[in-house]
Amino acid sequence: MNSSEHKSFKTILADIMLQTVPSYANKIYYSMGFLSMTALLILIISGSVMVFMGPDWWLTNSFGVFVRSIHLWATQAFIFFILLHLSVVFFSSGYRLSRKLTWALGALMLFFALFEAEFGYGLRGDFSTQWRTLQAADFYNGSGLGLLINNLNYAQIYGIHIILIPLIIGGLLFLHYLLIRVRGIAKPYKADIAVQEVKADHKVLFIRGLILTAVIFLLAFFFKSPLIIPTKISDIANQDQSLMASTLLDEYTHTSDTATYVDNIAPYTYDTRKIYVEDPYAVYISLTNQENMLMVFNALDKSAQQKDIKLAQAYFDNQGVLDTSTSSKNPLIPVISSLVVMGRSGLYESYLRSLQSNGFNPTYVSRFLSDTGVLEAEAQSLNITTDQYGMIREEKGALPLGAWWLLPVGVLDHTILANDDNQDRDGALLVGFGFLFLVAVPYIPFINKIPEKLGTDKWFWKEKKKSTS
Image 1 (tube, rainbow, N blue to C red):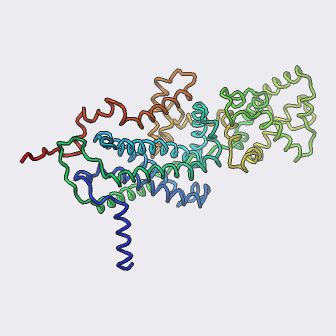
Image 2: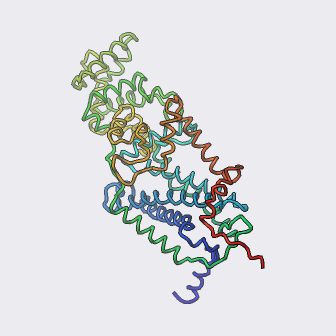
């Protein structure tokens, strides 16, 4: 690099970064914003690599697992330092002196960072993905966002996670830093406090960023992102044929959780009888050229159908052997047995996946797995269900802890909302109001003066009386 190029780089850096700051701004607690940006850069780089390499790589390849772990620990750091940054700004009254908009932009960044983290969990491709996306889908549907967001749709969440929200965060970050670059670091709002302007110590700032990067890499190496193999329909069909058969009967009779979903919000408004029984059975018939026993069943009168449904349920509850014979006295038994056979081979799940976005929208699969109750039982054994404060950890005893930032939501569910029949809806409303309150903190009388009343602002600046001479 020649001298002119070197100067050009220094000039660009000088244009971007603050050159003079208040004397206290070189201390580490004023580096929290820079450290959160460092973590964001690591997220962008590691996430880009993962996008190009794909899920198989980040789930099974040893280096891919390392990159996935870097991404997870960088997420932890990103949110941690945003929270610390907001805390420093609040307790130092940094939103005073016309800095309210800067605070609001930072609070909005936190809001979208939390959404981004949850969508990331929904894309990882392991059991955590299956369980968390189901829980979050109920949260979105309860809040009304289910009309726009299907958290079970891998393709949709992929676009939101790698394009939409990063663009929003990038725009907010640009505006946030632009205001800081133009106005400088917030100074004490009290006129009797003298502040000396000093040269910004960029070297120390970058060293702190490198230390954070090294810590993230070390944590990723020693504490890898947890991976619990996701549950497949073939697992259930092979391990507990009675459970799969009973679930199929529930889907057919419209008595499953999915079929009776009370909010009637997409994507749960589809006909479970058609999706889980009629259509896949038609595929089975086309492959085997057997007589269509579902047509035989449908030709019966209603009372005979109800009788056969009860007999089929009792048959499978008693661990009856699979019977795909077209000579069966109860035509529903070979129908359900045929679908269990499809389930064992993996063809049933492959078919369900093929119905939506070429497999990138596993809503039908996720809902069927949920209806069996297997996912909840597995989550319960791992201590990650909602009633176990499960959203704040990956699995029992594992590091990293998981979405520890959702602890307030867990507390709400166990206290104010414990006996609320509309827990998801009301929880979403409380979280929404909470963020609106956070954004509006600088504008709320008394609240915006809490640091002054507590005297915490003095911990961040050195008070010096102005000379009277």
